Amino acid sequence: MHPRREEIARTAAALMNRGGYVQTPISELLAATGLEKGGLYHHFASKEEIAIAAFDHANGALRERMAAAIDSAARPREQLLAMVDAAFDQVCSPSEMGGGCPMINLSASAGDRHPVLRERAAAAMGELREGARALLRADPDPPPDPDALGDLVVTLVEGAIAVRDVTGDDAVIAPARAHIHDLLEVSQ
Image (cartoon, rainbow, N blue to C red; front, side):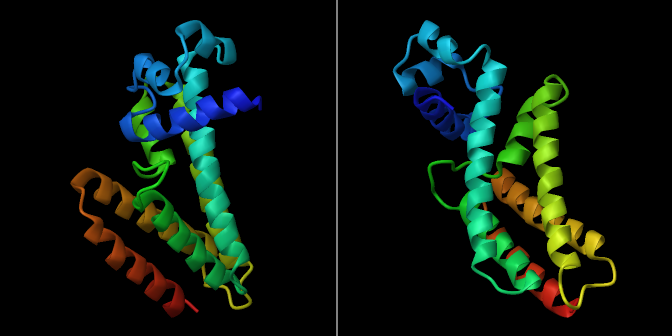
């Protein structure tokens, strides 16, 4: 990706993950990037293309953090727990992205009116679910239904993040994290 385009995507990711991928006005993007409308559309053909690049940047940052966490652990269940912790830490801490989970935010922002954006979020969520399932399948002592458990873990993470985002209550994350840790230890 062209460096200027990448810079715009990074700036748009921070704005759009907080304010909505569809709802963030172009005027906000122009003010944040210092570009004129023609300069912005020189790099992107449409606002939808900007939203996709912004999502890809935000989701890429999340995936990189989770991959590094997975690499830091030895066994598959430990890797999944590290991935869970990294996901909670990335979306719940003040950061460049802020604003919660990029997949939830893009899907909520897109609704039914922007199927291309919603499909992008669904594909990313599918990759996350498959990653959790694959780690549990690779465990030397896999649970009876690794796919169902992987889906449950992702659902608990995303549900806790959604409740936190809706209520503004960070306190919901710690018990969700603890229950996921307990769930993965019990299923051994």
